[in-house]
Amino acid sequence: MIRDVSFGQFIPGKSLIHRLDPRFKMVLLIAHIVLIFCTFNFASLGIVTAATIGLILISGVPFKMYVKSLKVVLIIVIITSLLNIFYGSGDPIFQLGFIKITLEGIFRAVFVSVRIILLILISSALTFTTSPTDLTDAIERLMSPLKVLHIKVHEIAMMMTIALRFVPTLLEETDKIMSAQKARGADMESGGLFKKVKALTPVLIPLFVSAFRRAYELAVAMECRCYRGGDGRTRMKTLRAMPLDYFAVLIECILLAGIIVCNVFLTSVI
View 1 (spheres, one colour):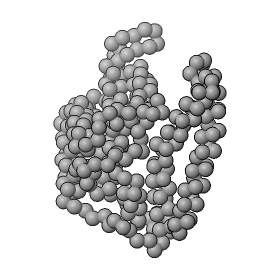
View 2: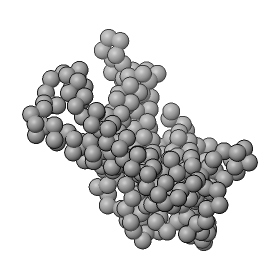
View 3: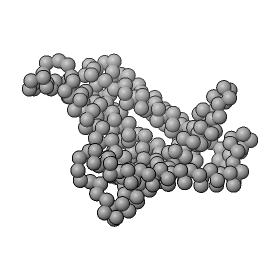
View 4: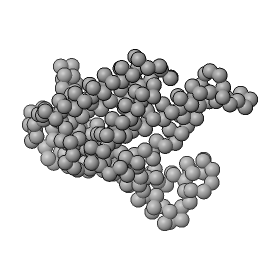
C-alpha cells in the first residue's frame, strides 16, 4: 500500500499541461474543483468528468500513476458512498427494518464518489506536471499581495513545497522500516485492529527519528548556502504568461458556461 502512494511526485514531460504557467495551473485547479462541486445533474457531472479525463490524457503522465493516487482514498470513497445510499430521502426502493435504500440516496452516492475521484485526479495532475520549484514560485506569486500585511509569503511557500516534496520520501522511508521490521520477525498483518496499531509502534519511532534527522540536515544545508528568506532574492526563472495559458482559461470558462446551462435548464437530481 505504501508503495502505491504517488501523491507529491513530479513526472517530467513536455506536454501542454507541463508547459502551462504554474500560476495559471493553480488558479485553474481551484476553479476546476469549484466546478466539480457545482454539478447538480448527470449532464453537468458528465461534462466535468469528460474534461478531467481529457486533461489526464493531455498531461502525458502514465494512467497507472493516477490509479495509484486513487488507491489511497478508495476506502473513503466506499464508506462515503454507503453512507449516502442509506441516508437518502424519498420513497424507498428497498427496505429492511430501519435500513432503506432510495433512488435519491443512490444518486447522491454516485455524485459523491465521482466528485471525490475527480478531485484526487485533478489534484494529482497538478503535482505530476509541476516541479516543486515551480510550485514554490507560483504560490509565492499568488500570495504576494499578503506582503502588505507583513506576512512572510516566501517562507510559507517554501514550507508548503518542502512538505509536499517530502511526502514520497517519508513514504519510501516507512516502507523500508516496515520491511526491516518484518525481516526481524515482526508480525504487522495478523490480529485485530488494536493489535495492528500496536504493531506499528516499532515503525513510528524510527520514522519520527528519520524525519527529524532529515529536517535537521536540510536546515544545515540551507544555512550553508546562506539562505536567509525571500528578502532581496532574485529568481533564475521568471514566470511569464503565454498564449497557451490564456487559451486554458478560455477552455475553463467554456466549461463553466456549459455547467451553468445544464444546471439552469436541466432538472437537478441531488
